[in-house]
Amino acid sequence: MVENQLVYIIILSIFILLMILVGTVIAKKIKTGEDFLMGGRNLGPFLLIGTTVATAVGTGSSMGAVQTAYERGWAGAFFGIGLGIGMIALVLFFADTRDKNFMTFSEELSYYFGASKVMKGSTSIILFLAEVGWLGTHILGGSIYLSWITGLDPTISKIITALGFGVYSIIGGFLAVVYTDAIQAFILFIGFTLLAVISFLKVGGFAGMSEGLPRELTTFVGVQEAGLIPGISLILVTIVAVLVMPAYRHRIYSGKNKSTVIRSFIISGIVAVLFSIIPTIVGLAARLLNPEIGNTAFAFPYMITEVFPFWIGAFLLIAGLSATMSSGDSDAMAGATILVRDVYQTVTGSLPDKSKAVFFSRIGLVITIGLALLFTLGSTNIIDYIENMSSTIMSGLLVTALLGKYWSRATWQGGIAAIIAGSVTSFTVMLNKDLSEFWGNPVIPSLFVSLLTCIIISYLTPKQTISKEEALKKLEDERMIFEKVL
Picture 1 (cartoon, rainbow, N blue to C red):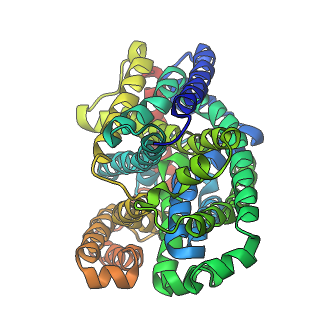
Picture 2 (tube, rainbow, N blue to C red; picture 1 turned 120 degrees about the vertical axis):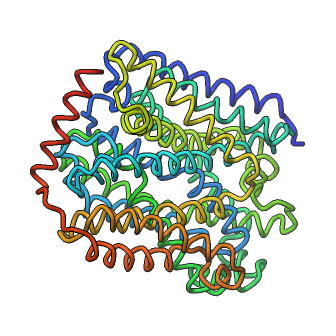
């Protein structure tokens, strides 16, 4: 239990209420289901950079990175480096998808394989579950704040966290997410920069860290402590996640045009890489100031509530909450879009009724957030949660997307097989202690097996006969029906 608990709770409550107010104001602009889910597809550079950066600098790259730095030194920067590289790679490979007016990643994947309904239906379910998993990391991270400052049961803290960003998302839709993200990005960057500078000075800078910390924590980029292959795996698994996460695709689809998307993502990627040093410094400082923290996930809230004066801690608490909420609302919205646009159609064979489109979208958000909350009830380690979930689901999806787009011989059967093979490989590694310790996480073997499987199965199955132009026309006709229904 920390001092000034009631004051912290009041400050947090005021902040959440302000975000809900923003959502309520934005809700007045919503006219159709697509307005609610896609925000009008007209995001300019300022909003697109704000929401992309806020989505990237989330629970993993803030709290998770602090925890990793506390445990493994400069390896705490790996997550942010992977995010930055991933965002730049994403637009280098896939920025042209903005010109095709996709609504979901499963629709995009379907396009690569001749508008295959099997690909679209199966990947929509997989991607929805992936978004639920990612959303869970933000609920988990936010609950750690509440547990530390209030002493609440972890389950209660997770429920409160989910409601924190869930309410304004449900009220105002994607535009509310974008505007609140921009506000939160500003707050979190000021807050984390302040935290890093003060922490750095408090422990005596690099000299103080070198003298007070074990040598393995202060070696170059944490390689000695993390291990070369596990370190590479952590960066790679983050790159893979960004390349296939629907939340980032959602921002490409909603950007004003292709050039705006490219500029915004490159700037966001550079910012993410530069930001990676900030939580690493905080984690190292926390280790130096208190090497006996029982649960290392509490390293970040320990710094802001126990080390600094109250007024600094209060602001930093809001900055940390901003990191969690700005990523959580993004994953919730992307998941709900997939659920309403693709999963609903896959299961029912029809699309939502026009008069109830916004209602269905809001129900989709409730379902998405509710499932994510259930998935996190037994989890306590943010980075482990992210690494294992990403390796299991994302590796095969990345192979499928890249080969589907750039290799004309790829078939939908090969794509589905790659996704299955990647997941099986990931589980095999995770269940084997020796393999898990060697690789760090399963992303490298999972990518290799997925790639090999996709190539073999594609050669063993009939070549795709529908051209990319015909596939796009087919999806455009379907989208027109969807828009009319909405």
